[in-house]
Length: 192
Length: 192
Image (cartoon, rainbow over all chains, first blue to last red; front, side):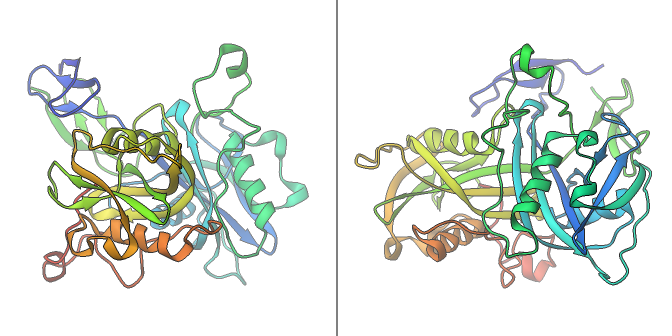
């Protein structure tokens, strides 16, 4: 069994988990979630989660970025894997820090590669996938606060030219940092 | 000694390194580099690297984001650690994918917290730190292509309102993906 012990490696300034046997440093860094608000004729593509956390709730096609891909490639891969959708990335809608769970989320605005025939289908991590008009979005069934933030960012810019990305809303501290128990109980943020 | 073997974990769709003893999955994901173009009176703060890679070359105050912090907090921490500079983050200048080395870089525009008295000093990872006017920037002594890209993004927007972040320039594929040997030899991208 590998035995990791907390140590400050040479040239570093904070404790990391270091293998007592071989000296391997298990650096743990924030992970990047990439996803998209995929728009078709003023409707947005949402996926109902087939997996925990937040199984049964609605989210954007999004997931962990993998080694070897760009942000845009990762977002396109997730749309294909989770929603069977071939998309073209337009630009960044929002960049969110979810420090409580060590995540950075980069959410793009995208369109279907064949806009005239928007094709989608539930992947293994989705129960169902659908296109929603703004007033049809299941607001009380969204999986994570950041889904809400990304949809608001899309609502603000619409089909117009993308400007500075939205960040964590100043009025909504959920997920940004570890919160007091009284506040944390209201948070459903756990990943995407 | 821990023995990691390539395996596809349950519910996953690609090979990861899995410990043959305990089943621990060593997920490897892209890392986030956060940094800033810190501007003072049309001058930009640059650091000459005291460490490899690219020791002796000039870079922006930037480094790996740590768990528990936001992007903005990470960028401010790096400016303090590498350049002894207390800064206020203004917004995102550029978001770059350096897939060849598994990095995403988020570079902000920032100003000194006390603009009237811009204080800075070389940290342990810097040989020297200085403020440079545009025509004084040591272009042929920059450490990484992304430093060049971020400085160009700053030049494009100047002190004006920040818009859509710059991305990897279409004319400069360095670092985006693993390149053919004939091209790779021209790349100095190795990290920040």
